[in-house]
Structure formats: structure tokens, C-alpha cells
Length: 501
Image 1 (tube, one colour):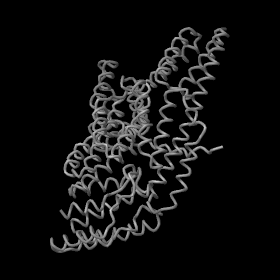
Image 2: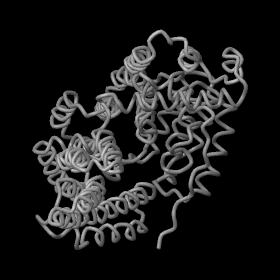
Image 3: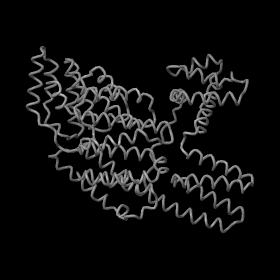
Image 4: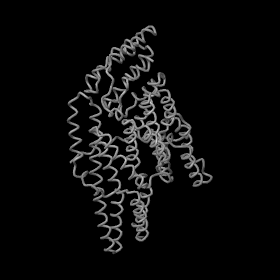
């Protein structure tokens, strides 16, 4: 039996500050208006005063706020909790939140009615919740709803209705079991993909082990059942698994067929598309990068235009989708050699990224692409700033070897270009140590790392040009595989060629 993951330690010291800083102007206005309408003339209540203090601050300062409010430590701590709860409730009541919030509210109401013997009212709330859950295929919630329906029917003496809820609940559990099995396969495939991307090399025979794992996974009985997927969500995950597996085997055209089938399924089931934003956006990313890997620029343009018009149920997911559009657009411009246009797009995207807090891993991917654009366009100061953010971030850096390697390589390139020889010498030793200890095998043995130090030490423009030209002539172009589009890789040779010209 798998052991539960370690429970994170509770640390809510800055929760209120972080939450307030991430509110939109509209959300702040809705909260303040709602509290004023509730309290009337009591607008000076302490928690509203604290809200205004936190909203106007640049950093958390509990001692300062506590002194301004004239509270002792216990009173201030209780006030912070009260305001935090108020804010969360306000956000939960706003319309852009997922229908899951409405389902939870209806189940809570049903329990209140049930405990007071108002069984008919409880049934109304539960059926409303089940209608929403069924529409959006929230299978997990439907399990709980059917349990509640059976309980209420039993207490109401309606054994036939209780039996019907029991049978429906059993069927929903079957749906959930299939989903969980597919989700497990999807997760396994993503872990294999990470292994392949971290160790891929055209000459690397060790890649056979993960490739065999891909073949075994795609042969899983749960994937070979044809049209027996019980839910639309199951069909989407099935298509995602098949597309990733085929891509990892180098079958890009066949992978694209599954991705297009996935897109058709989403188009025909808008509610399911809306209720599974992370899975859907990840699928959009895969189809966009597949178009990019196959050089299908027109198809990618069409996809990006479609995505610009799409919307999800929450502001955060809409932000994520538009960040994906910008990220794919930058990648396309870089592949076309339009480095300055890519950097201009990156500047616009960076401003959007500052307000995005929903998905740190996705945000890191976008930030990495922005850094690439700045480096390739020769905007060194912008590149150094972005690379510093990536290195100091705790999300991916140090967890994925190919990511850390590419960030370090870009950092070396930029500092060599500006002639910072002390920095380059120090970081070059650090990179070489990293390569020895990380086990990374992504063709790194073909690079002449001494090039960076030579470039940083060059005194004249002619000397720098000679060093760059020599590097271009001696390096082997990276033509390993279109798989590079999906991983983290800095086109060092392309960067040097840009400098030569």
C-alpha cells in the first residue's frame, strides 16, 4: 500500500498578505462593496481597516499593522484569520469560480436541511448539485452526492429511490475507477518522458529502457479497449496518453492524429473542456509543440488564433491559456530566426506573467522561454534578470537536470558576450562539476566549454569574431530529434551564429 506523502507544515504567517496581493481590482472592489452593504455604517470595522492596510503595503509588516490597529498579539492573530476567511468566502461567491464551488455549497445546504429533518429541501439541493456535477463530469463529487441521496432517501422511507441512488453510485464509482487508472498511466508516461528528455542522445543506447517502458504502457489493457471509455474525460486522457507515447517513440504524425481527435472531443463537449482546464491546456501545449516540431507553421498559427478566442471559468485559467499562446508564439518566432520579434513578444508576455500565480511550474516554463528570447536577441541585461529569477526560483531549478543545464549554459553565454571573465571562469567550473554529478547525457560531450572563457577574455572585436567563427566551424549542429521542442535546450550554436553575423 503506498504511503501518504509528507504533510506540509502549516505556515500561514504571510497568507493574508499573499492573498490580498493576488486579488484583482475587480475582486477587491467586490469584497469592499459586499462588506459595506453588509455592515452599513460600520465601514470602520477593524478587519476592513486591516484589509486597506495590507492592500496598500509593498511587503508584509504585521508588527506595524498591529500597532496601527492598537491590538495585542492574540487579538491581531484572530483578526487576521477572520479577514482571511472573509476574503476566501467572498472569492468563493464570485461567479468566475469553478462550478465545484457551487456543488460544495449545495451539499453543505443539503446537510443543514437533513440535520433539521427537512428532507425534501435536502433532496432538492442534492439533485441540483448532481445536475451540475453530471453536466461537467465531476465524477468525484457525484460519488459523494449519490451517497447523500441514498442516506436521505433511507431516512425518508423511500427504499426504491435509495436503491436507485445506490446503483447509480456504483456506476459512478466504476467511472471514477477507470479515470484513476488512466490518470495513473498518464502520470507514469509523464515520468518516463522526463527521463527520456533528460538523457536523450542519438548515440545513447541507454534510451532503450524508457522506450520499452513506453511500449509496455501503451499496451496496457485499459488503453486498448477501444470505444469503452465511460466518460468524456476518460476519452481525453486516453488520447493524451496515446499522443505522448507515440511522440516519445518518434511517431509525430501518428501522435498528431490522436491530438486532433482529442481536439475534436473537446469541441463537441464544451462543458468538459471548461471543467478540465489544466488537462486541456496541457493538450493544447502538446499539439502546438508538435506542429512546431513538424514545421507546420500555418497549422500552429490557426491553433493560436483559436486559443486567443477561448475562455475558461476562472481568471487564472484564462491567464494561463493566454500565456501559453504567447509562449508558443515566441517558440515559433525563435524557430524562424526572428529573434528580435521574439524578444518583443517576450517583453509583452513578461508583463502578463507577473500577475500569474496559479501554476508555478507552468509559469517557470513560460519564464524560461522568455529568457531564451532575450538571450537569442542579444538583450543581455533583460536576459540576466530573467535568468536570475529562474535560478533563484525553487520550482524546477535543481529538480530537472536538462533545465538547470540549459539555464546555466545561457547564463554563461550572456556573461561571456559582455566580457565578464571572472564570472565566466567561476560558473564554468561550477557547470563542469554539475555535468559530472548530474548524470546528464544530452550531447554535452560535444561542446567546447573553453569557448566561453576565450570569448570573455577577448580584447578586440576582431579577436571575438575569430573565436566565434572557430567555434561554429568545430561544433556539430544539433540535429538529434524533434523531441528537443518539448524539453529544455539552449541553441548555443544558433546563438553563436547570430553573433558571427
